[in-house]
Amino acid sequence: FGSRADCARSTAHVEPCFRWPAEAGYMKLNISPGGHPVTVWSEQHSELMSRNGVNLCGRSYTPEGKFAVPIDVTVPHQLDSVQVSFGSTMEDCDPCDESWGVSGVEIHTRG
Image (cartoon, helix red, strand yellow):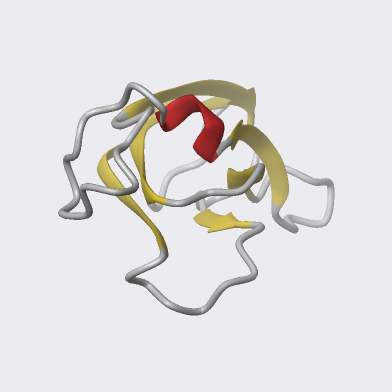
């Protein structure tokens, strides 16, 4: 994104799928003085929330207790570009056991 702005607003949805044993997803924006990524949103999800969940991702024995978690963050931003990154604290590498997705990412700037 290529114009200098006073603030940046980022919106998105995170979709935790399957088993998340007390792990978290996060979003980072490059808002530090040196332009390095800083965590601006994080949310923890536990599979215990899924006891009465609905199967949305294809595994009936691990229904989703949370899905399409909204993110809406506005932060001061003075750089010429905005960098957005997403991640999680998941340690399991099997996407059939623990997965997540991101959808509807939007970046708005105001100068």
